[in-house]
Image (spheres, rainbow, N blue to C red):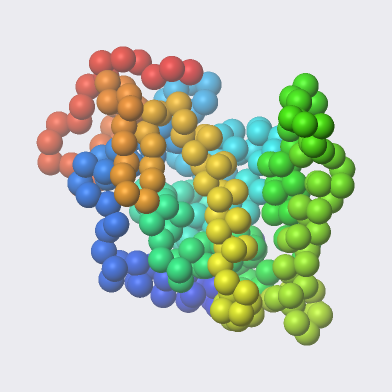
Amino acid sequence: PRGGAAMGGQQSRQCEERAGRGCAFTAKELYNLKQVYFYLCLHTTTLTSCPLDRNQFHSLLGNHIQYKPLWRALFTAIDLNCDGVIDFEEFLTFVTDLKRGDVEARRQLCFRVFDPNGDGKAEKADFQSIAETRAASLRRPTWQTTPYNMPSMHSSATLEAAEDEYMQFFGACDEDGDGRFSFEDFESYCLLHGEAMVAQTLKLLEVMFDGVIEETGIIITATDVKNTKPHIDWQDHKIGMGSLFCCSSAPPVFTTPPVA
């Protein structure tokens, strides 16, 4: 189970702050983001609507060997109310923080990944999954060649260096050496050393997320949400997911069935 009152209060404050800042997306962009959410809620074998719960999230991310160490931490980072289901508002908060978040929002998202049990402390045991995913992201297939006989990224030395980088960062944040650090410790590190570790961690999440939604043809950037496959509607109308949102008009109709 995730952390109790302390984390719940922190997340409530974060939700209030986001509500006060308003939405970062236009109406057209929100429509495209809902399409992404509908896609994520389509069962990977039946193509019928299902909750974006741990099982569904695992089917989308956990089956990728390079993301396997991190999918649980990412799920809990997005599931702000800790009810075991990522709703659209939580999904929208995640996308906003990842793609268009200010410095504080990006730090908070990063720390939620560092702190998957939600107790307000990032611990070395939890941190290992991020280091492993970072190392896995650097692997290259053995059949790929590297020009000019340079060392390939799949060498054990490179992978160990990637893990060591995160462990060194952990040590710098854990100044008292008790094997854990708080969000305040993390902020102090960022103020002293800059946002490079935040950018690197969120880039890892971005690669994971963009890879999962690639089939939708919807490309989300800091300035645009572009739909390259507008003829596909990912909503499962047999379930009536439109009732989850404030929609006054009739839902769009499939012109092309989703591709498995």
